[in-house]
Image 1 (tube, rainbow, N blue to C red):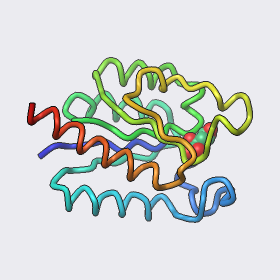
Image 2 (cartoon, rainbow, N blue to C red):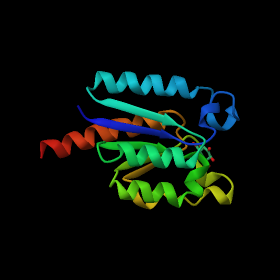
Image 3 (cartoon, rainbow, N blue to C red):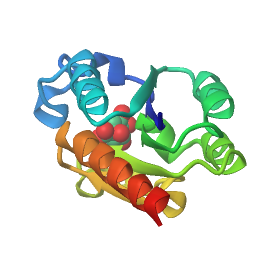
Length: 149
Ligand code: DQA
């Protein structure tokens, strides 16, 4: 069974309470439960992590990255700072879709640069929690296509 990773970075544990006008009202638990349900119905496994600690995310990618068919990554603020997370993803040749709930390009200048975008298969910003769903659909479809060919 194909396994996909769902990686959420700092402060995403506060979704639902945190600046709802920017990030929406869904909690991370709601989002993860919905994605796991979709994964189950599509015959794939979703292994998820949320951490406020950069090294924990690096360890997770090191541990699970090589065995995964792909990942959905919202690294939160680490998007704009973490070369360590980038290096771990590269070290494991992990294919991923970068997701941001908000449109980072319509916000403060320091959010416009991502250390992940240029190594991502694709980037989804500004679609709220739907971004995760689209990313999962794309990954399932894309890796299935590759398996078939
Ligand atoms: C975010 C955008 C980041 O700039 C911010 O630091 C976050 C959330 C988003 O999903 O829109 O924590 O990744």
